[in-house]
Image (tube, rainbow, N blue to C red; front, side, top):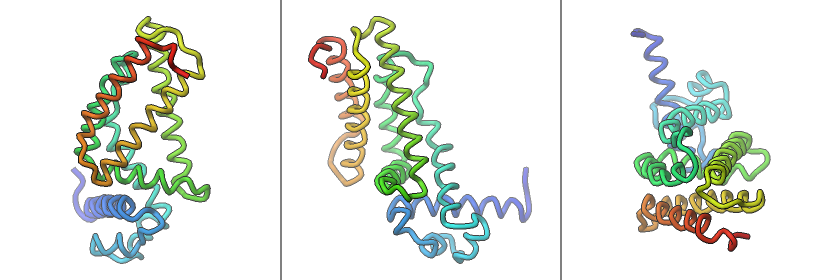
Length: 204
């Protein structure tokens, strides 16, 4: 077990990252100042610079911590085809119980439309990875005979629409909409699966 000043330094660094995540989630990277973050941990902006080098360095640590924490929400990639999509209710339940993590991602994603934003590459990669994974799961469903053959264009359209629906519902929930996020996502997934399996000819 690590003890003494080093351990205290690690714990303080973790508190700074947690506070920065909360501030960036609430105010965005642009609006969340080092002073606001420092005030939450009873430190000075100079202390934050000492630990992370810069505000951008602190953001990098926040995003690394976000990645680590959200790994537990990841759906098992070993689950094939349609079964993978049917587990998305569990993903939404994780978001509901970890509102701050969802708020941070949605805020960073919105800000990262600015080509100069320091989180832009991170957000682009997260979306690219997610699209690749979900597209692969729909292709598995086709290969396993769960879903009739679809064109590449149909598959791409369906998965991008699914991502957009989930992002939109999450945003509405964060804004205070009185909805059961896991339940409404589960309903949409059921509808999407029905569309894929029962009447794929209607897909455009």
